[in-house]
Length: 443
Image (cartoon, rainbow, N blue to C red):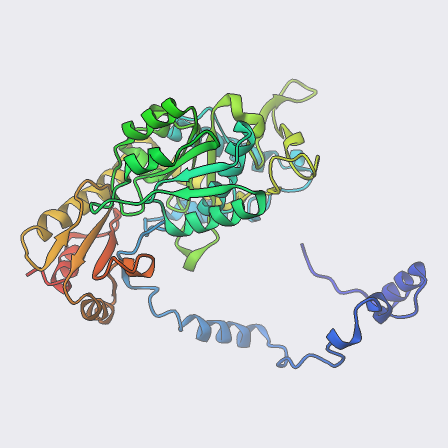
């Protein structure tokens, strides 16, 4: 939307129509003690050259932008092909929003439809929505959906799920009267299935797991499938989509709802966002799913066309009975994911997953040769927890070498002192991995 200022005559015309004498009259209901009642103390306007110089100086504060990145924990430094940025930057697409009167934008709807189709194939779900704000909010929406379907108000979480996802879920649950229970994780950073099963009672709507889990471990999903079936509860799986290039889709082990963070699919790290959450489910639950869904139909001339379908689920149609307050999607980020998947194809996508996993295994095999570093659990995909002596000192050394060596787990778990969660993608080279090993004390 372009900004074009109003002329004095236009302002006078609007004030006359409203029957008031000044713009200030519009704000009479606001108490004087909370008004500023003076001009804002802002710097003078900048011309284009000055503005570019100012923004460049601000950007220089980002010291870690060119560092070798081994941090994952939900956002990953994968390579984004040039074609992705070239196409999402086209003026026909360059908006973050599903347009109003969406059916006029057939190109945008067609792209979202392709996104839904690809993600459905990837996750094994029957239907995927047009995206949600991010991975954490997609999980929050999933627990609301499960409780709505089962007419129960308790959800049991694996203790090895992303702690910030759990916090987000608790926020969703608090306002909706949902009881969030969480199991512990074992010494090998896996879900304690026995304790999780004990937490599931007659009031439980769903079990939530992460696959792989927050610590990178590939969980024994047969365990949770048995529990969910025996207890007649829904199974919600949060997953990293890249892992589905090698691992079985969640549909194969009984998932009813699949969610996750779509950032690894053609979206840069962007200093934390914007990202996109994805959500898929079985056909029988489609009308209970939040968010927008693009459907295929034919127009008056019999030509293929796309529409926003099943909109009666959404809050702009039935506010009080809506499945969710979600009334939008991350269209531009979903487009990037669509282009990324289409460009790579099945074999290319598998290669990204394979090389991410192979780099992780290379690190593990090299680390096992040293007594200075301990691998907590080698059954991982592309992230691994390691225990390092004198971690703080070695972490600082890595920073001095322009390297982000991973996530210190004591940020979330005080008991996990001297432990680091390290992530590997297809971008990492053997030389970079060797440098990391050297910094961590592996000669």
